[in-house]
Structure formats: structure tokens, C-alpha cells
Image 1 (tube, one colour):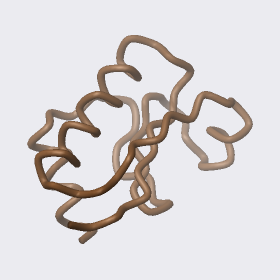
Image 2: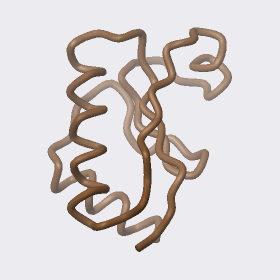
Image 3: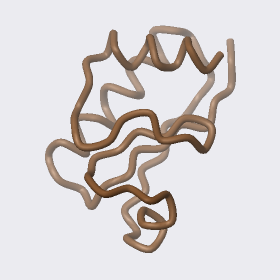
Image 4: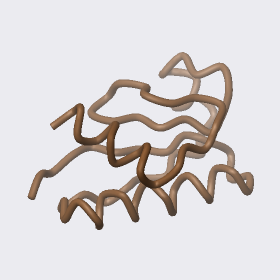
Length: 82
């Protein structure tokens, strides 16, 4: 069980919600004690340098921007950051 800082950046569009759900599912399937945080504040989002949302941030690093990866793709990204 690993604790990761996982954030989904986005204003709340359908894709942002979908990415949030998939990221939480990926963390759950890996049995990680991680709560995925949703960041909707535009100033916070811009502080990451994100040009397109939704974006997935793991431990402070943007790993996906502008698309919604599958649960398996997110699991692979999380495993790379382990």
C-alpha cells in the first residue's frame, strides 16, 4: 500500500469528473491508500502550467494533460511513480 499525492486538475467538466473517477478506481485497484483530490481553482491549475484540462498530477508532476486515460493506463502511470 502506497500513499501518493494524486490530483485531477480541471474546472468540473464531464471529462474532469471521468478522470477523477478513473484515477480513484486505479488507486483502489492497486490497493493504495490515496484519496484523489479535485482541483477546480483556476489559479491553482495555472500554477502547474497546465494548458489543457483535465490533467492528472502525481506527486506534484503532471503526467497527463488534455485527455482521459483508461484505468489501466492510470495504473501504469501510478506504478511508474512508485
